[in-house]
Image (cartoon, rainbow, N blue to C red):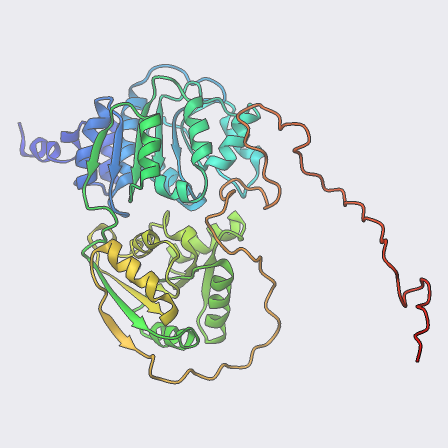
Length: 463
């Protein structure tokens, strides 16, 4: 045995990856497997269900993709129309796009077909792509549920199911759709569930859709990468804009994601940065898929240095070389902090995460410190300084929706709010009397006295 073969068997070949897939994996820069891949790939190749907990940026995509692709490449059967041999569900459109991109890279030169089904874009092209059948389907639950109900996608031949970022799907209200989709797949399917956290609801879901899974955990739940230097800056809300601008003037902040709590807040931060001389792109759930992808591509290719985002971008963004993550607002859910700062310090690189904390956010800060099991050091304290004078504003800001939460039902489905289809199962019509109507409701006749508006004149008061 040559030294070359020995070295090869110490990498992915030792885990069971071989042939053209192994060559494509090496060509893509996947040389040595990461801990999550070392534990998950052999178990998946053995046909076991896998329940994995790993921090964001740990290499989960390759951990579930490579064993599935190995088995698909070995198949000699023909694909059936409208079917998918493997289904990978992701909570957000960005994560779905990223997963498919990774699979395309790993299967370069191999005859493996993929399709992407997600909201915010035309259904026609997705239906056309699925018509002859595909090997791997990557989808968001909302849009896929619609296509299955309408008969455009058939999951009865799907023998591999992957739920990526399952806890995020729970947060976004997709669990009922996930259960329906899992039930529609082949009864002898193999299931993998990957998540950065494992709340009780996800464990309950795993028990209902998985068979004796192998438990894989490469890091304590909700821990952050050691390469990320974390700190907190104490500042009032009115001080945050000026502090952020002063921070971004530093050339060391070469690639920065700024996280805001709400869509309205993200738009406001972006406008303020523009007024302060910083060009920034923004991404959140109210943006069209094309606008979101354009902003993300500009950030990825370096033409945009600053990306302002809500928690919709806390997962699914894998951009090499992100130097800083700035939490302009603390998230409502402490777990989201872990995913936010996980955008930097990826693949062993160093990263810096800075959190701006108003006194009203102290309770959220304590929750974050509790879940990451460390106290964030205070890098600066501006609370004893006066608020800066606000510069004059030009124009009126757009009216935003009252509910700015990104974790609302319908993300990934492509339907505007207020037009959600009833989730009664595939092919079932909604119960009579439950359909919404766009017709205006007739006004009830006014039965009171119309004083001074053309009705009877009021009686003259006695002096």
